[in-house]
Length: 223
Image (cartoon, rainbow, N blue to C red):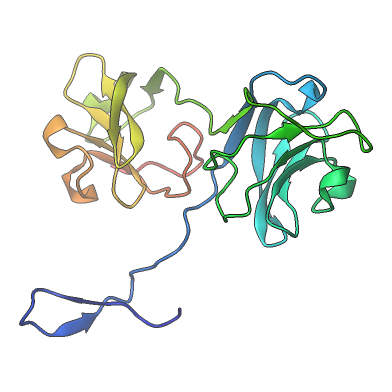
């Protein structure tokens, strides 16, 4: 809908427009990794990058880092791994298929992928094949020069098992400084007591809500 959402302070208060509020599906991840074991189609394993501005049947497309392999949707909504010349074509012109037309992105589905030896061969389950965004790095380093927040520079380690707003968290090696996501998807450097709170309670902000991890973004940090 293009209608503007409204909010209210409470039950007896008036409704007022909230023109900046948007409701949309989650952004596709900038990269996906196909991992596991395959009997016939090992060339499909590896890292895929989102192709900005390109869609097939209205859905996002990811391209393999080194090979002519693409993750794209069919006209029926299934996810396929194909060569570029067959993008969006029938399952029979694919190397792998994920038969899930629910509207989920490929990394969100719990359906088992299938592979085939060739066009005229049957499809068989590939239960060990996984599709997921890349794992967050175990450490990050903030380097450079800052006018006010030099205490934020240095090495940060991934905090295993901890997430803020569904995203990973890194802690400074020696100081109470943390890299965490805001509810809007921006990356922040904050003190522990403010993790995940608004930008105004942060020392640094990376205004990139594309879904990229902080080291993947080309957006300029602010202090």
